[in-house]
Length: 422
Image (cartoon, rainbow, N blue to C red):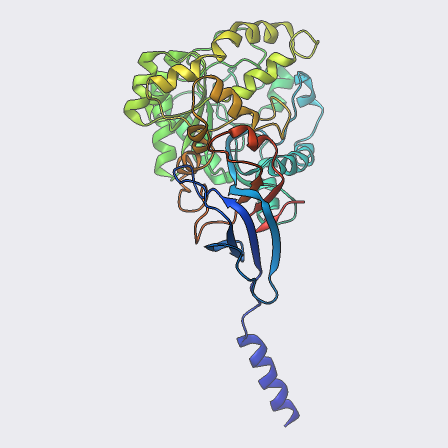
C-alpha cells in the first residue's frame, strides 16, 4: 500500500503544472504603441514573460502575483536599437585588437548589455563583433544569466580584403593573424561567407558596403563590393531566411546596395536623391546612427583618434547634421539605430533629440524605435507595442513620449522578457 501511495503521489506531482510567474503592473498611464493615444490608469498583467492583459483602472492582483506600483509613471513598450556594438567601448586605440582576446569582449559586453537595458532598450541588433562574443551574450541574456536586452547578433562583418571591416593598421603578418575569415572576393566566395556566417549562428548578415570613418585607411567612402558581390550576398542571405544590413556612407554605394536587395542601410551619410529614390523603390530602410557622429565629434582633438581618422571625422561632420532630414523629405523609410560603442553605451536615447532636430516629429521618432524597428526585425508580432501575447518588454518614464521623446532619456524601470532589470 505504501508503495502504491508513493507512486500515486508522484503521478500527481508530474501531472500538476508548475505555478505561473505572474506580475501585475499598476500604471498611471500606458502608451500601447506609437499610433494610439495614451491610456489612463491601467493594469498590465504579465505571466511567464508574456503580456496577458491590459485593463482600465487598478485591478486586484491574483494570489501569489508580484505587484509593481508605477501609478506615478507612464508605461511604454521597450525600445529597440538596430545598430549597437556591445562588445566595444569608444576610443581610438585600434591596436588593442592585437592584444585583447575575443573573450574580453564578452566581459565588456556584459557590462554594456546591462547599461543598454537600464537605458530602456529591450532589444538590440548587434552589428559586428568577434567570432563568438555576441553569440555568447545573446545566449546569456536569453537564458537570464546576465542582465541585458534581447540580442539579434550578426557576428563578424563581411568585408572586402583591405576594406572597412577588414583588419588594417598592423604589419602584414599581424593583419593575417587577426583576420576573422570573413573577407571575400567575387560573387561565389561572398555567397560562401554568408553561408559560413549562417552556419556559425548569425541572426543577420552585416557587410561593410563602403569605406568607413573609423578604419585606418585614408581612402574614400564609396562602394567597396561590386554589384555582383552585393547581389550574391543579398540573394544568399535571403535564401537562408536572413536579412542583410550594410554599413554604407557614399551615395553610389548606398544606391548600389539598395539595388542589390540589401535590407537596411546603416549611416547613409552622403545619401542623395537618386540613392533615396532607389531605397524608396526597394523598401530599403535607413538606420541613420546620428549619435555615432556626435560621439566621434566629441572626441576630436583629444589624441584619441589617429590623424587619418580625425581628418575623415571632420570631413563628414556637417553632412551628418542634415542628411536624415533630407532622407525623410525624400520618403525613405527610417528606423532607429545609434552605433552605440562608438559613443558610450547607455546614451542611446540621445538619438531621439538628434532626429527631432532634423525635422522628425516626436511621435514619428518614437515609432522608429518601436513599431518600425520591430518590423525591420520581422518581429512586429512580438515586440514594439504593449498587447496581449507580446513579449513583456516594458519601460516606465515620466510624461508622454509621443509628445516629448526627451522623456525617454530618463527611464526609471525596465522589464525584458518578463524579467525586471535592477
